[in-house]
Amino acid sequence: MKNEVQVIVRPARNVRGTVRLPGDKSISHRYAMLAGIAEGSSRLENYSTGADCASTLGCMRALGVAWERNDKDGNVIEVQGRGLSLNGPASALDCGNSGSTMRMLSGIVAGQDFTSEMVGDESLSRRPMARVITPLSAMGAQIASRGGNPPLRITGATLKAIDYIMPVASAQVKSCLLFAGLFADGETRIEEPLRTRDHGEIALRAFGAKLDHASNGTGNVVRIRGGQRLRGIEARIPGDLSSAAFFLCAAALFRGSQLTVSGLLMNPTRARLLDILMQIGLRISVTQLDEIHGELVGSLQVEGATLTQATIAGADSAALIDEIPVLAAIAPYTEHGIEIRDAKELRVKESDRIAAVASNLRLMGAQVEEREDGLKIPGQQTLHGAELDSFGDHRIAMAFAVAALRAAGETLIRGAESAAISYPAFFQTLEEITER
Ligand code: S3P
Image 1: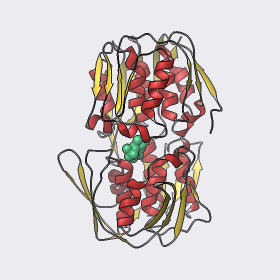
Image 2 (image 1 turned 90 degrees about the vertical axis):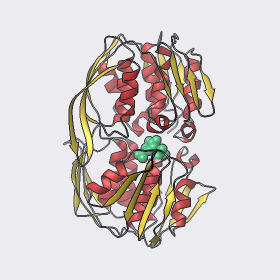
Image 3 (image 1 turned 135 degrees about the horizontal axis):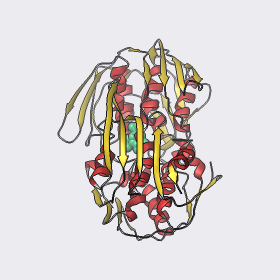
Image 4 (image 1 turned 30 degrees about the horizontal axis):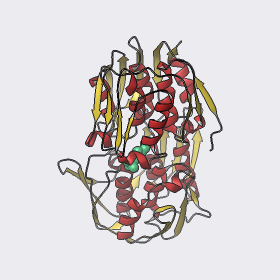
């Protein structure tokens, strides 16, 4: 996809309304993969509408997993699980733009008795894969790559369990190794330096696997025994909190805003955004809270107020990694600004998100200090509409549609089609809740 669609965002007066989000992207990927290697069928309601999760389904089909989509009932995917052994794919597994698909699925194909090739688009082809190649090779898979980048050629094996301390805090890597652990002889132990999202652990338990879990102070230690069989589930996937982030931040820009968000994922490893937004002034009340297959789901009532300031660093930067672009995009409208540190992982996401945010904010007339591992953005700035680029990155396109709501004049976003990677209906929903 190359800068095909341009969207114009006009300034707004207020944000008001009710939103219900498509299913969480992280959970959708994991459920689709585990449903494929489970025994029996699974029914996944509210499956993510994003192109990334469609890439995962496409790869599962290429690996011999039968599934059907029923869109009439709200994105229901019915999957016929094959058990742990999949079919060798006839052609390369196309992961599209999705790092999650390539990294997590590599843990499953590494345990098969065939060779698979995994390819991605231009952006994915630049992203680091050594983080999965190193531990999967230690488990016995043979992996060839282009200097640590995709494409990957993975020859599966009967894996050996490892004891692995992850050098980078990454939930994708943790899930990859837990999935590989299912195919290993013995017990795989994974230690993470900082606490990352735990959807892999929760999903494995939902599909019937047993895991041990302990804290190591800052992060987690998870252990899984190989050879466990999974069974299919019926689940409704909670609304995507990282997509809701754009509307929550839009509501944060207007003192009189009122937003209701229902059926939203509230997993504590993902919900740090809510604390930060409350700290800086947004009023958020949780009006309902339930648990589905181990994941917390809730409804929120949100009201805007004056935004103060925030510093995001250390464990918070890992916990908020997908929400930092939109927090940075609203930073100029706060009283005292937002500073982001310890976030150099942002440089190897779908785009270099630190550079992309700095470049777009500057085009809107903002003052920004760009650092190797973050950004410092002063508050009380007045921004003007501008011609911006998404850099082919869904979260950059959506973050700047939000920043544009408080700018003077119109903003044009080039490459706006990239929003469909995680949220095809984003611009439409944003229009529905903005008052002009
Ligand atoms: C994800 C983990 C994060 C995040 C990505 C989804 C996941 O990546 O940025 O959008 O579903 O596990 P890393 O694990 O590389 O930090």
